[in-house]
Each structure stands twice: as C-alpha cells, then as structure tokens.
Image (cartoon, rainbow over all chains, first blue to last red; front, side, top):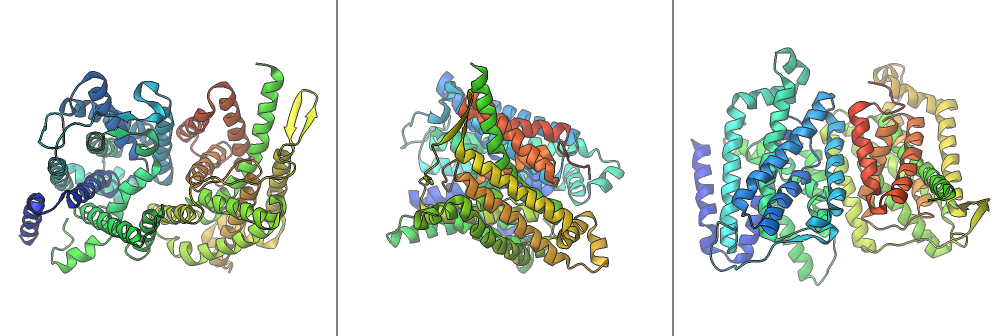
Length: 323
Length: 289
C-alpha cells in the first residue's frame, strides 16, 4: 500500500514536471529517464537472470541505425521503424545467446563475448558507406515548436513524455516479469544455475528469453536516441563507454531491484551534471571529469554497497525487500 | 603483391606480436593465479607508455632503459592494488570483481585524459627509422629491440615461476588454493606479488610499445580488449598460450592490414575471439577447468 502511494506520488510529480520547469531541466530529466530505461532493460539480463552483458551498446546502436536508416533512406517513420529495430535486436541478442548458451559460456567469458560482438559491430559500421560510415548518419532536424508524434519531431516536453512513457512501461513490464513464471525461473538460474537445471528448468530457453526481452527493450532506447539527437556515429553509439554508462545506474541503484535502475540513473545524471556545471563555473574546461566521477562512484558503491543504494533506502522507508 | 612484401609484413607482425604477448602474459598470470580478470590491463599499459614518454622527454632516457624503473614502480603499484583493493574482493561474485576493475579502468583513462589531454605523444629515438636489410626483407631496428626485450622479460618470468621458491609457491596457490593455505603459504601476500609481477610485465610491454606506436589516453580500452583477445585465444591462465596468442594476433592484424583494410584489422581479432570462445573456450593451449 505504502509502496503504491509513493509510486503514485512519484508518477504524478513526473507527469507535472514540464509545467514548472524549463527546457534545461527537461533535457536533463529526459537523459535521466533514458538511462533509467536502458538500465531497466540491462537489469532484466543481469539483475533477473544473472547474465552479465557489457555490450548493450550493440542493441542501442542497432536499434538506432535501423530506425534512422528507414527514416532517412525510405521516409518510413519511427513507429513503423521500431518494429524492425526490435526484430533486428532480438535476432542479434538471440544469436549471441544461442551461441553462448549452446556452448556453455558463462560469467566473465559471456561478458567478454558481448563486448566482442559490440566492438565487432562498431568497426563493421565504420565500413558501411551506405549508412555514412565513420562520418555518421544524420536525420533532418525538424521543427521544435509543436508536437509531431508520428515522426517524433517536436518540443523537449514531447521527448520527455515519450521517454517517461517508455520508462513507465519498462517498469510495469519488469514488475510483471519479476512476479511471472519467467521471473522466478530467472532468479533460480541467477542464484544457482546447476540447481535450477536439476529442478527441471530449461535454463537454455529461459536465459535466451531474458536476452531477447532485454535486447528488444534496449532497441527502443536506440530508436529514441536516433530521433532525439538526430545524429549517429558508430564510434559513439557502439562504443564500450556507452555500455558502461548503461550499467552504472542499475549497479549504483541496486542490481535486480525494480527501483534501483531508476534511482541510480536519476542520481548519477543529476550529480554528474552538477559537477560539470561546477567545473565550468570555476572557469575550467577539463574533459574526463565526469567519467572520473563515474569511476569513483562505481568504485565506492561496489566496495561498500555491493547491493546498491536502493535496498537500504527501501528498508528505511518500510518497503521491505519485496521488489 | 610480391612474396617479399608478404614476408616483410609477417615478420613485422611477428615482432609486434611478441610485445603483445608480453602484455597479455601479465593478464594471463594474474588470471591464472588470482582468478581475477584485470579489466584495467590496457589502461595500466597506457600509464607505462606515458611514463616512458615523460622519461624520454625529461632525461632522453631510452624506453628500453626506462623499462627497468617503470617496471619496478609498477610492481609496487600492482602489489598495493591487489593487497588494498582486490584481495577483499576475492570471495565476491565474478561480476563484482569485474565491475571493480571497470571502475579502476575508467578512472585511469580519464585521469590521463585530464592530465595529458587527448593528443597523441610519441618517443623519437635516434634509431627509429633505421632498419636492417636481409636480401629483400627489411626489418625495423626498433621493432627488433622491442621484441628482444619482450622475449627476455618473458624468459625471466618463466624462469622465476619454474625455478625460484617463491615462483613455485605461487604456482601452488594457482593449482590448489586450499592446499596452499594448509601448508602455510601466505596466499594474500603471494596474490599481491603475482599482481605486482603482472603489472611489471605490462610496464615493460608499455615501454616497448612506445618504440612502435603513439600513445593517447583513448588507446587504453582497446589494449585491454586486445589483451583479452590474446589470452582467450591462447588460453586464459596459460603462459605459453599468451605468447602464442600474441604472435597470432600480431601476424593476423598485419595481414588484415595488408590484404583488406588497416582500419578493419581489429575486426579480425574480434572475429577470431568469437570463434575461439565458441569452439574452444579454454583457448588453444588452455586446460578445461
């Protein structure tokens, strides 16, 4: 009950946010929600099913390029394009999962395999001239004054609401998944895969499902990325630093929890932005400050709060560790 | 395309591969004993490369000579890193260790970006453009020196693990952790020693790399990945495997650069990694665990 009230209050606050904040706060909030969403997607694989991916930039990039290519080359809008983006990412995720799980690759080796696929694709896209290669793929920047949902062109408030809807959808989906048969199977696999198999769980199939769902969700973040930023570079979107930024939120917030990815993303985005502003206010222009900050936070959290910051907060709020 | 051109490319790839091998050896030794994957390996090498560049700039110290003090300092840093940061993580789940080192790697890369800026630096030795011509085949002097130093360091490390008492003790820890504890070995100390040795390896490799390539903060992650590719191809934890993997990757990179496109060369390394992971996950010379 208490959790529901808090959730309703949070939702109402987020819906009302554009009414009393400027474009700057809105863009920051959009960024935070973007990382909350991608973190939630990554969490399905790592937090629920225990499969560590360090190559989620692969799905962001493939989703973004699929939707952007359809839009730029054939004039097909994002709402049709996202299906192709999802299909490609599910296929890519299934291919990786199929190969890895069939050959019994797990743990660190699996993480390295995901990095290898992402890096392979990054360099590959550098050599696809049709999509701009290393020079990048650009979407025509449309008007920014009114809402055009069909083509995803419009005001910052529109993008904010789109991202909010995605994040809320992901939250609801994950809450449902966690309580579903799949969720329990995943947690059994995460805790002890051999024991899960001994109980008759087809671990191969359920792990594959986790990868597919995570990939499909992440592809939507890619579609959003393409239409929000309007430019795509393989060096940026497929880069390993992109994958690491995705995992920061859930790790700081709490791997395997529902609120962790959201809390972590919001916290990190606001803190990093304040830090950047602070450094700029001191008249300094040092690249890398934000990343050092991320690194230090990651180090401190993994050392002292290996379960993330959400579980102790949840306890304090009297929400228990139910989620 | 003449045969001598191909021979030239193969030889230069082989020599570079020996330096790659030494870098990967550090990674492999650390994994083989401590069972921790050092995700900050390439970043540590980048720090060594900067150290060599700075020493050369300040004292005109040749990177080959600089390798000694840099390796000594790295040994101490490596020891401290393992003793202070990683030892408490030995009993934690794999992904925790992995993320700990991802954090260390992120900090190293970006601190270097803050300190040295994004531009590339290099070392200009007197002999960097010299080469020996053997018939049709031309071999760069700096590549030969780098490869010889790498081979020498590798031989030293092999000898240490084979013949010294401490080396034997470390191998005992790697073979049987519990057994090592029972016979009274100070496992934590030996782990830290191993990490220090791995760091010293990568320091020497870094100094040698400055003879061959430029250094910029952004190269760290790609060397980490390269190191992973090499040790997994050769066999994670196998010392000869790391050397073999290094040479294989060095030659295949050089060949890909010659026949296809220099910018696509690391794509082949990753493709090789994927193939090896799938069909021989223990690596070419590794043992199944």
